[in-house]
Each structure stands twice: as structure tokens, then as C-alpha cells.
Amino acid sequence: MAINTSVKHILTAGQFNKEDLENILQRTEVMEKECKSGEVKKLLTNKIVACIFFEPSTRTRLSFSAAALKLGAQIISAENAALDFSVHKGESIEDTARMILSYADLMVMRHPRAGSVSLAAEVAKKPVINAGDGGNEHPTQAVLDLYTIKKRLGRLDDLNIAFGFDPKHSRTIRSLALLLTHYKNNRFTFVCSEALAPLPEFLKDLEKRGARFEVISNLDRWQDYDIFYANRLQEERFKDKNEFEKYRRDFVITRKLVEGSKTMILDPLPRIDEIELGVDALPNALYFDQAQNGLYVRMALLLYSMGM
Ligand code: NCD
Image (cartoon, rainbow, N blue to C red; front, top):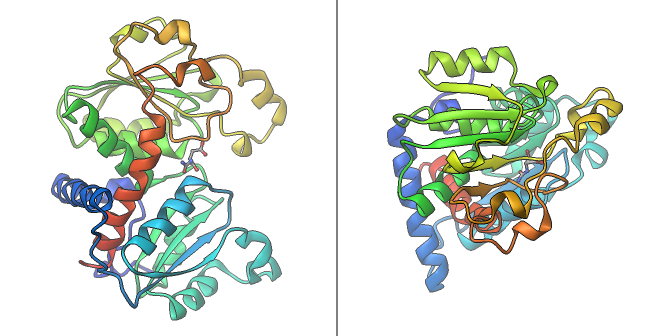
């Protein structure tokens, strides 16, 4: 079945063009101002937003919920859908989506299987937003990463950006790199152990989009990066837990490495081993601001999907 393109789903970072992104980022600025002045227009009054999570989440689920509430919508939600829902009894993702969207006006969904949120969207006559599908994509996180970069550096082109440390499994790295290919003259460096290098299909996609990138296994060029985008090793995506244990401490961003450099650090969080706690107090640490920006970006994205 094909996806109904007259409905504004958000399924992959690759679906946005530059104009969409500019509009969403501008809208996000308005949302941030409205939140800070306490005068948010209740544009989603009488709407119901469903937040359905088949995988754990702190920031994504709560910021989507807060975003919907700020805009005047009401929420129905499942934070542990894998256990609580009828899928547990064997119901398909498509039937689950049909039911949820017969009660709600929009569904935000996270699922451990790559491609599953798109399956839900295929049967949906109302918007579906991908809040992370397995190791595939996390497009709304990528938009908030973009917003954070623009806010701090004032530009989205001419960036020397590194991504560590599990580009093989990290959906946030994939989605952000895709979005950044829309902007001129960005250079990507993937920093990781050899076994965790980006998948060849993904690198091919980047190549097709004209991106310049390399894959390396050290932090020697730390000083050169405008941004270092860190993400924990995605333990839940490793088939072999011994592998995870083997690589988990290969790279750590230490206070000593960061201090005195201009390199800004982003991390979608949760932070596990990848950034020393001592880094948090340095001006380079942007990750908590980044998480807060999630609220404003998700307000803008809910309005985008609702066609407003
Ligand atoms: C990310 C995710 O779920 O992919 N978290 C998030 O949404 N902020 C990153 C991660 O879990 O490592």
C-alpha cells in the first residue's frame, strides 16, 4: 500500500526540502518566543494527540506531550505499548494504527523495528510522526538538532561536524546527517571503532546527496570541529552484548579534551559513557539546551503535520 501524500506525515528526515526546513525553523522561533512570554496561541484546542511508544523514551515522549498541551490539545498516550497494547496479543501495527487514529487526530509513534512507523502511516488518513523507528531514523530529533546548531552558530552551512560513536546503529546521527546535506559545504567525520562504522547503504545515500564525509577511529582532530555530535553506543541494537561491552569505552569525551576548544558538543541524550560529567559545566556543552529546544521544535512540527 502507498502512503497518502496529502497527509503531512513526518517519517524520514529525507522527506524535507530546504524550504520546509526554513519554515519549520522560523515557526520554532515563534514557538520559543511564545513559550518564554507565556502567551502560546492554543491552535490545537479540541484536538487529540496520541503518543504511542513501544520503546523507552524520556525527552521525546514528554516534549511531544508538553508541546501538544502548550498548544491546547489533549493527549492519549502509551509509554509501554509493547506490553500494554494488543500487539502483545499479536495485533498488527497497521490495525493498531487504524484504531488509535479513529480516536486521535494525530499519532506520534516510536517502535523498535525499522520501517514500522511507515507501515502505520500507510493505513493512516491522519498524520503520523516518527519518534524513532529502530536503528533507522528519528527525524524530529534531527530538526531540533538543526535548530540548536542554527541558534548557537547562526548558520547551517560551512560546518565541520563530527558524529560519534555508533553511526552504525544511531538513528539520530543518520537523520541529522541527512538534513545537513541540504546546506552548502558541510563536512562530516564519523568517529567510531571500525565495527561501528556507518552502513554502506547510508554512505551511498549521503554520496548521492553530494555530502563530503570520512570515517576515522580517533579524536585527534577535536580542535577542528565546529560541532561534535555524540551519541551513546546503542546497546539495544547490538545482537551480541559482548560486542557492546567490547566497544563501549573506546571513546569518551573528557573535560581535558574539550577545555579551551571552541567545539560545541551536542548529544540527543541519554548520556551513558560517551561524555564525562565534568564536561557539563563547560560552555561547549549544548546538550541540555538542545533537549529543551525539543519542546519548541515539536510544537512547530505538530502544527506542520496538522497543516497549520
Ligand atoms: C535518542 C533515540 O531515542 O534515538 N534519544 C532521544 O530521542 N533523545 C538517542 C538515544 O537513545 O541514544
